[in-house]
Length: 130
Image: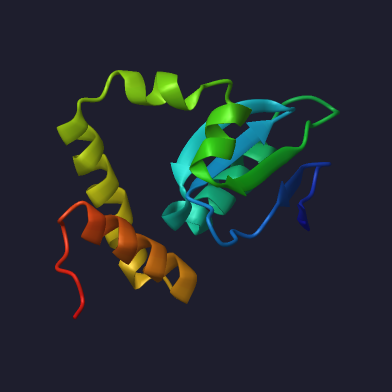
């Protein structure tokens, strides 16, 4: 974990994104304050630092920035995968997958690119390599 300390007792604790992380959960004092795509990690860190500095009172609760895989983030927020998917039609789910896997093709981690390619190919959004 990387600790980023600031003046006035404000503290941000942040983990760097790893393989499979797709969501960044921000907590303030242990309560979920925001969910963002992992692609916005740098913006999330900046926002967390600003939030930590603007908290009122002598004791400032820690602001944590936690990258997570989707299923872990859903569980962390008390949402089941079935609940998450229940309002989506098959076509909406396909569009969601294509929308969120396409940017992963530009990820520096070859495992992430391979996973995204596999998903997009299986959905027919990319041609199969020969």
